[in-house]
Length: 153
Image (tube, rainbow, N blue to C red):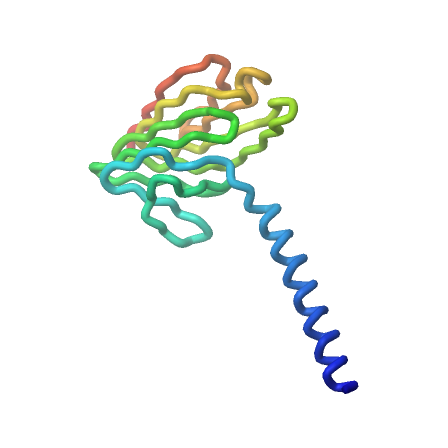
């Protein structure tokens, strides 16, 4: 009886520890966007793993979006920002914060190569300049609502 009781306590401790670890991991991996369209070769690189992009896939801070020679991808962020990327693109979702109760936040996208078209959402509307796109030669603070960028190799 005592052995069963100790085993139950150990099991309860292990389950509690797993619940804490899971909640911490979930807090760090909040979904920031979702893939809405995919055509041709497109992938998400997350924690070193390359995943074929599919409609409905969630995106997280630090994810890298890559498209092949025939690829394109359309993404909608939780603040309603819409991003479309064309062939041979590589874009890192470097930093993304958004508070839906007051529409404040910040966004930094690191565009390594390719093309991107964006229609800004609530972040840029509520805090002009809080949405930024980094390229190999400049950092752009977004104040408008629609723009296109091309980074050539």
